[in-house]
Length: 621
Image 1 (cartoon, rainbow, N blue to C red):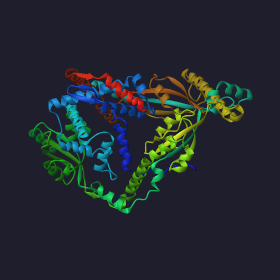
Image 2: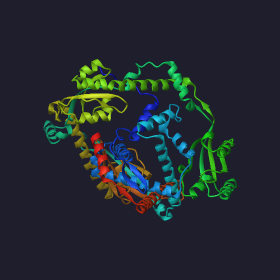
Image 3: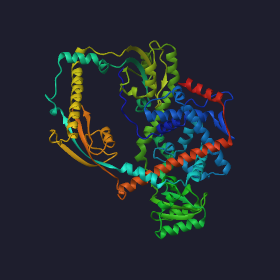
Image 4: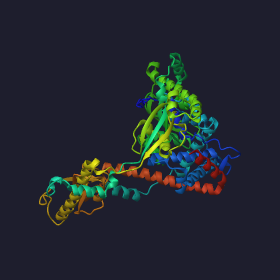
């Protein structure tokens, strides 16, 4: 059966986003640890549940994979001590939550609701909050609404505690100025390109003996990867979505279900800065009106950033009546307040006023249709899972499975370089890389709700083709290698002549001078590595470096330019450095505070419970 092409991409689909959320919450096979096992550690009266620990471990695995591009197993994490680091973070978080509760720090229901509504993972087709999707995502992640909302409230309380502990951190002026001066230094340089035309005899052609010698010495360069010849059967919701018929009444009903997303009330984009009392808030407003200060300065003076005070989009229903009256009384962006809030009197800066909007059905019909069709296709695949499993258990071949079900048969010569659509799924790659000849095909899940099963038909081991078959490639590799070596040697010789006193012209080179090269700057054609060497050299030094197979460089450092403290760019850099350093110091201070709190409250770790969770996670892989 011909393989179907997988190139059609869906539009914004709610369930796909919710599926990613479920992954982020660790909702696959985490919640059933059985028996009386409920927690792995405790800090004071606060427990760290097995679900919390398993979710954190899986979240760390996903974070590391995103950063490195490689999936780490739990065993590899244990070797590097990453599992212990996860536990340390959970203990610190629990200690800070316990401390915040002891101190009576909390936020109101309105703040919790606002954070949940503004979470894009709970967004529907039109981007607004999807109540049904919220419930669905939490249920599939093994959470209930009360528990998740308690987590949101605890997180908000920790943020309040962090502002209280580390909000006034300042960076020493000399420290930030020294870093800024170092970063803002520039260089002036003269450089020239050494090309193949500058080599004696130009490009060379290899003799048969040289080709043979190069092939014999560099066989690994021409080796083909191991090829795993695989037959597979698979199906995805995309394969079935086009064949699913969706009634127009169902599209209209879904549109009405999501009416709150398609009919947005008037909103404002605002920031909030709280004050300890009404008099202080009114004094700040007076200073702003008089032009003596501004909102940004007030935020900075408190050791905060604009991210700390950002409230996002606010509708009248999201806040207390007094706050809504102040915000929506403005006819244009500006300052509102002081107004009473749960955290004391506050000034709001309204940055934009958004009119109420309504999205007609015709604008979102295709998106709703795609969502419903994909949902129906996913349910159809789920319903077929048991039947396909039964066929495999009964000894049916993949060819027979494809003939009797919606699954599609295909073959792949699998390696790390495979680019067929099914090779883009991590789950398929993991099984394909480890399956052995004779293994019975098993039904596996794909990240988009699809299914697959595969069979290893044979393995072609890595091999170097005979020279006769790849002679052209060997000759090209020899030429590139030889030319690069000759260019590097020529550049070294020319650099030595120039450093000894010759000009670029006397050395037969056409030079170009570039001034004001920044430390993170770029010069067309010159590698970042060579520019980095330039910033390590002394004025007058001449450097030589390879470029690519067809060129090399000779470069002279003409001048080292100190940073101009009065330049606007330097001032901006200094501000950015101070912000970064303040963030780092704040984080370090808060971490130290968390450790002290944990030590004061006391904690216990149940190593047997930890090992039990890890064993189940290992078993799940």
